[in-house]
Image 1 (spheres, rainbow, N blue to C red):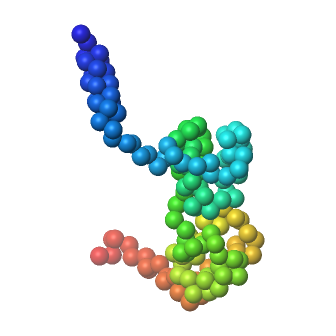
Image 2 (cartoon, helix red, strand yellow):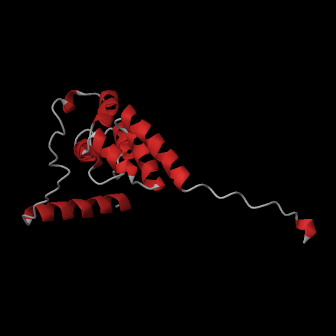
Image 3 (spheres, one colour):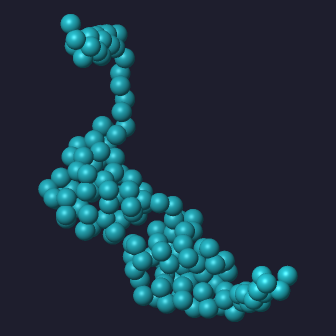
Length: 156
């Protein structure tokens, strides 16, 4: 008897014994609902093209459904690239005016996060214009220090 046959027998015995013992396997991924109407009719390219129109919560639902049903690698790769934390709490639900207001008091790290996130998802011109203005304000408030003066090593 080969090792592979022995291992296969062990795993099939474990699975059948857990099924006989009545242990319910509640897998939330396998029970994932359809993320949005018509999703199951879309091919991989159509899904990937439409992902930028969805919030992080919706992308999470798309990923759960995709993993449990069609498991298309290009879609999962795109989701991995798109999923991430929002630059501001509740960013996806904020209006343009609320984002502009939040940028007035934002630090440079937050401004960069907003710029990257906005480019990846909504790409709204008003927000991106305000990001540029916020970066200019931040640079004026915190000017870069001049580089250290050149000191040749032979003069030491």
